[in-house]
Image (tube, rainbow over all chains, first blue to last red; front, side):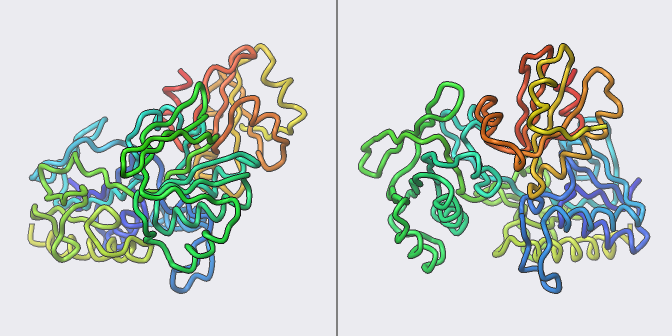
Length: 298
Length: 101
């Protein structure tokens, strides 16, 4: 019997572990892939108070080691189900705890169109700064209208031959200054009021099909398509114990409790205003503190 | 152990009659850094394969073009000189072990 089971070893989950271990609680952390969560993709973190600059990898590794030093038990198992009585079922075993903290984060949202999965790593990318260099001198598309899509298009415009920025609306949600900068780029073409409906190719991306709001279709020849349309949580497996909003995020009125007593939520996976490293670690520390407090009487 | 190789060594290694895994990475790539210790661990346990790594920032465009590398980390898995599998992106140890089986 554990005091707390933490699901997810990103910044929120690891911070919850840090607080629980410092309070001498018996915990276990489950992680399906590798520790660190989305922050490992950040080449530079420059907005974490008190740390001028750190790479996402270094930050995640330091936090992981900090938690390991306190004796954290981390199991690389995939959680399949959580029961109301705080039993957690993984692909390997069954575990029981007084409390459960769900900190499963979010992942890149997919367009869910034909060809997308088939061509991941073969022209379909969710990280312009990671993969941009492989497209030197080629034509590429960026999909999205937020800050990430705009930053991706600007970054790529210095590497590739031409960037098509495809956005489903007329207006951009991103910073106006950056949008202006983008409009002044000679090798960036804006394709507005349009959705990508299909990705074509033999064994790598060769073209995309774009449909505008008047249902007119056209084919654009590109070697790469960078998708930056936001994040999605992966909470469907928890819908028996927690309430989800229409986008799949866990609803929590106070940002800690879920609809089941003794099951808490922390980090990007809950409905919230700002998804940042600062808010993830904040959530983790609060969730652990409340779980400890409320678990005492059990 | 995972041995780092240079571009010039690549052809000789993949065209040998052995089973070979090459981890294509870059020093600035977070997911690559997460994957590296996993590949290292597997290399110490798996005697069937030879394990190498290749820093993509030190090579020309030839290898990426020939093998369609468009994202890192990419693991190239060869069997007797033939590309058997291309694994793109971060994977857990279990996933990689299953792929190598």
